[in-house]
Amino acid sequence: MSKFTERRPEDSLQHAAEHEKPSKRNPVLFYLMILFAAAFLLLLMSFFMQHRSNQEALNNLQETSNSAVESLENKLKENDQLKEQVAQLEEENQQLTDQLEAYEDQSQQEQSEQAAILQALADLNTLRGLYNQGRYSDARDFLAHQPLVGDGVYAIEETLALYAQSYADPAELEIYNPLEAWQQLVSWLG
Image (cartoon, rainbow, N blue to C red; front, top):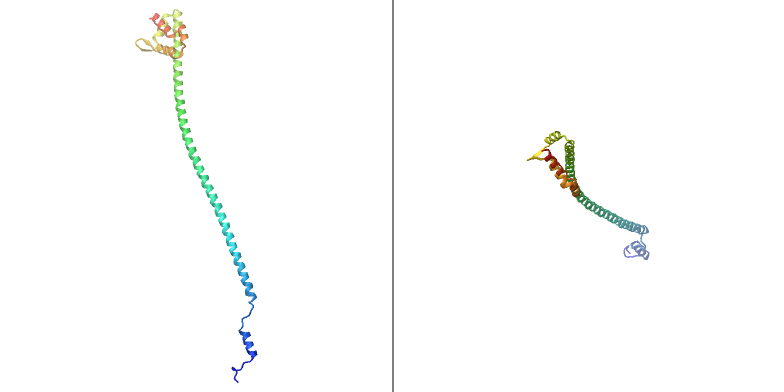
């Protein structure tokens, strides 16, 4: 009998046992698979959490950026409004300055007129005083030193006419008119 032709039942069992796959898997391999799956799930969870955190940070930055842009736009609008107000105030200031200058010029002119009127009234009183004291030659000398504006008209007459026209009360002029008094004294001395 040859070796190959005869088989023993024990040999066939041994051969079957050698070539048969184990029914149970290796427990270390199963444990490693669980660990890799858990690690993968943890990595996946970490990725989504990080992504969500980044998205929230991005949203916060976007809101902050929008808020800053809006604040900047508001500041620019406010700046434009303030520039317009400054321009208006400068224009009003210029108008008020012009008005003030006009009032000052008018006031200065009125002061000059009033000073001239006071001087004219003082000259009238001086001439009347000299005439009333009977000092006719002194009165004529005083009259000769008075400036003329033309054709025998004294400058004082224009000033007294201005007084009668602008400053005197008509009721007062009915009682005493300085221009008429001057003209009368000039005619008496002339």
